[in-house]
Length: 568
Image (cartoon, rainbow, N blue to C red; front, side, top):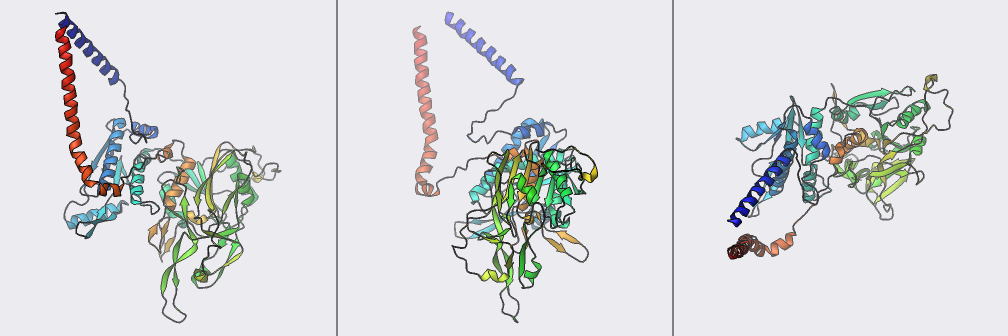
């Protein structure tokens, strides 16, 4: 009787404890991620973004149906991320997976055209069968996100030829949350920060930066500003861009941008230190590389950078068409490596450049860090050459005949050269200890000698931000930034520059999501092949054997417990 009462009491206490736990947990929410790389932990910026949604975000992912196992895993990761985001979105996030290969051939062709109109292109893979044959299949690792009548496409898989196939897939895993949240944030934002391209010193025109400006206009209000020596004219802008000036800056405009920086403004400088006119090369003639007299060297030097008056020749380069036919014969154009067109390596340890493909440069110069080691400015390289480069001082002669020059290890033995870097901290004014009464059109202003915390990007090649154009009789069409019209490939210029501008302007921490680093855990393929039968046997027999052992132990323990109770 006493034992029965005790059992009833214990049962009641257990019920009460369970009820109390449920009451406490129903009023709070938490999730535990036990993975070492926190792959199921949603960033605080992401949680805040989806919690603030006041309407439904609808995501259509075109990754249903048959596909290789790697892309099935990517599909599963996208679904897991969306499931996690749904928890915080309070029913304001919905999604569907769609099979783009369904329907007949005509329906698929029409659907592919529709997707192409949304900026979604297929990724073509080759699948080998057991009989030695191979077939090609189109995969669409992409989505379209819709919010309040606005929509934007997302490409989850961006092939980087610097990485192995496994690393490319892993990079896609890492960027799922960033791609989703950055797009949702774009579609749901109501305020657009102002940024400005500086005009008036021979900078690139709208067509030459058109592709980037069209992309940035989705995130910002993009303006063009002529300084006119007016201090304070840039104060309303979150960041300004100096895109390849070709004429000298006067001291009045230099003071304007200097004081903008001193008041916490952020600047992206894309500077050609050496000018090369390629029109002469196209006609088979020589051209001269001469120093660009932009008059910004003293300002940049004070901020911690020196762009050298030289040109980099890099064995890691792209190609140009060259007529190899003898004089008087039918032209025969072949693609030949042009060492002045460097393919720059991105810093994989920095959130701005992490995972981005090679960035194409044209006639880049080397960039050095200057200033005291005790400076309050942090300097981080973002773009660098390969280790096999040759440096030529300007002025110098350039000719297409250099393609035939013999390449020797002695000539190309320089270490990596920095071409672009980020600078962050408290900068010293380039006009410190100068008399300024004649500046700002004679209007008094409050001069600042040392900056508030500011950020600056400096690149020693203006062409990093320049897109090629197609000129027709009726219009000029900008090509995609980073697109190589000879190789028909797109390099990482646009993604890189977008991340630079986002870093300079973002105060929400969105780019931190991009810093996620998931461990790549690969199987030893050789070991798997050798031990295939043993692995199959273990995976087949181990689970039922473990369950049987657990059942036996449980039965024995239970019998002993019942025996002890009966003796009492």
